[in-house]
Length: 353
Ligand code: ADP
Ligand code: MG
Image (tube, rainbow, N blue to C red; front, side, top):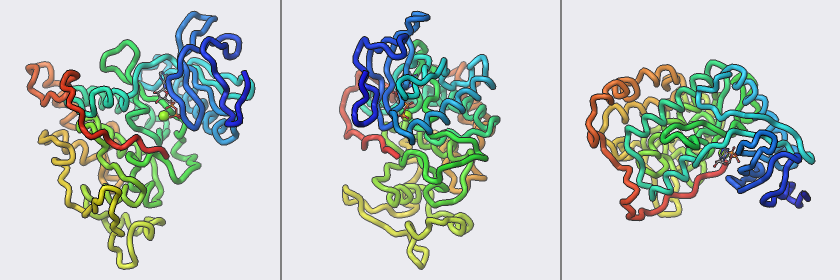
């Protein structure tokens, strides 16, 4: 192995990492480094190996990821809360490496494979319940995920609709926050955008965005930049209440001295007017429970947003979960159809930080 100038570990197929993990295929690559499918020659198992770039910033971030994953596996020894299982970690040639159980495709790629047509609400409810189970555990431990989005939710390799949450590389303890500007843009909560102290509710905001996108196949709030991002939220939610704006240290970025939103025209010539987009239209659904569930995740006021425990009791989750046993196939808007291959306009590429 030779480190290239970008401080990535150069991985060649069938090479060995730490004289133990034979690299088979790249699963993901990003600024942090890469994730490869690998065979553990000590156990014979196939695993996912996250190899972090040999750069201080990424190394530090990954060390936090290891610390949080380690705490979570101690608190959840049976690993039944849908958090990816960290098998091991080690340093090899100055690269921090994390060994994970191998999972399947991420939900962004799954949506893409479905021509961005979205999934039926029954399947999305299953995903939501699994994510909420993870968020309940995180809440008990005081951990914020900070980067909940479809790419960080993976199908289990064998399960059909079972999923796990990955990528704790931006996570933090609620009482040990380091960064003020976090989350991927489309899923970023108003308090992070506006510069208001944030906490666990930022993950619930992201969850609302995620379930909406899984249904429509398109991000709920696809801002091209942070100003448009807040405009997207205002388009659905109206302008933020005064007590929220009063706390916003970054208010001037988004509002003029009279308190009017700075409007802008995006690359498609679209100007977003606060309050002009009904949630029903945005979600392409008339299921009242689903609309209410999303509305209660994307509240401006973090204190009014549902907690994961409350969300588990929400009618969209609880009533239907019981009712589902009596449901006939086709009762729910069935939008998942792998053969309906009419390509739609592809959504914007997933936003980076
Ligand atoms: P990053 O911090 O760069 O986003 P992630 O941990 O999210 O890193 O991993 C990047 C991608 O690699 C994921 O979106 C997923 O597609 C793939 N991946 C990550 N972990 C696993 C795993 N345990 N099994 C299979 N694929 C994985
Ligand atoms: Mg990720």
